[in-house]
Amino acid sequence: MQKRKWPIVAALSEYVRTQFKRHYNLPDERIFVCPNGIHLPSPEKISRADKLRTEILAKFKIKQADDSVFFLFAAHNFRLKGLASLIKAFSILNSRLTKRPAYLIIAGRGKTRKYRRLAKRMNVNDRILFFGSAANMNDLLDVADVAVLPTYYDPSSRFILEALAVSKPVITTKFNGATDLFTADRHGKVFDSPDDVDSLAEAIRFYCITENLAAAKKAIQDDDIKSKISIETHCRKLLELYERIKK
Image (tube, rainbow, N blue to C red; front, side, top):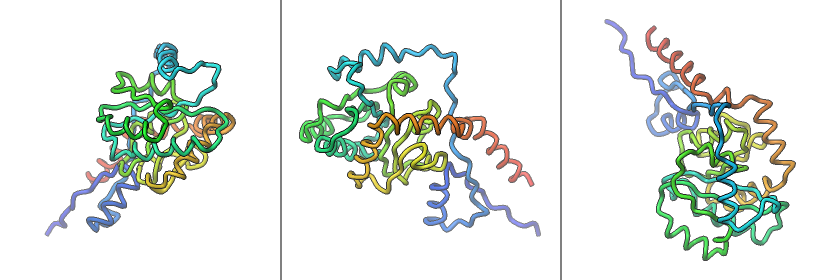
């Protein structure tokens, strides 16, 4: 009698693998980790970032000489991705000096009314721009200095990977499988929970220091993170999985 072959689960990250083990009791041999991947931006791409930066500076009513740090949050499910915590973290920064002024750009199709109210109540509405849907995320990433996603759950955020691909430091939680692909405190910051608003505020404050920004960007480039997160690497892992199934 031929031995039965059970289905194999392809998990986008170690985080997803642990979820299958914990909630479905799957053994290790039935789970194959195939890290998420993205199409890397073309170096020949003509960026529209300069025009976009000018528009964003005008909307914030600030000048280039102010040497601001732009944090970019991009999602459609604002609640799941921790936007309320992020706004609260920015309110904490009002009482803590930062080396450079911090501003938050929010991109996505989520409903904004209650978050606008929260920003006003927290007295940070002048530091936050609700950008809406972005036609080209790479343009926004060119403008931004840091990508931030204080998510409650994400198998492996493409937004975080896209930021790393253009050498931008990232801030996210341990509930994001994309943390497999970079090193905390070298390429970005990882904290335990979106509810830990103080840790989020400190991570934001850390990247308001020019030297910290530059060191993280250099580390991302030196460690060739973009090769780890490319769609080519993802496809090689998929082919490895198919070979395993075929045996």
